[in-house]
Length: 42
Image 1 (cartoon, one colour):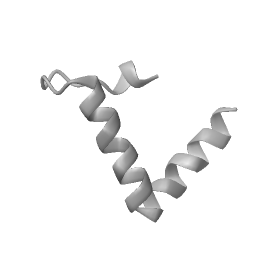
Image 2 (cartoon, rainbow, N blue to C red; image 1 turned 120 degrees about the vertical axis):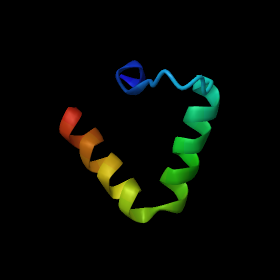
Image 3 (cartoon, rainbow, N blue to C red; image 1 turned 45 degrees about the vertical axis):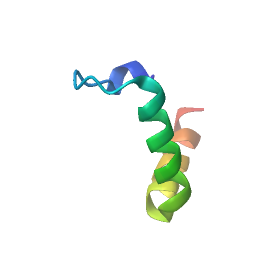
Image 4 (tube, rainbow, N blue to C red; image 1 turned 180 degrees about the vertical axis):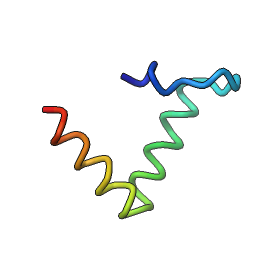
């Protein structure tokens, strides 16, 4: 699934995942949206 969102900006995948995890922990609104999509995709 992450490949669908990959950009041609040269940022390594590991750095992108770390940034997404940081955002997930820090931003409650983002976390709710991610959790909602995860439940919907089950």
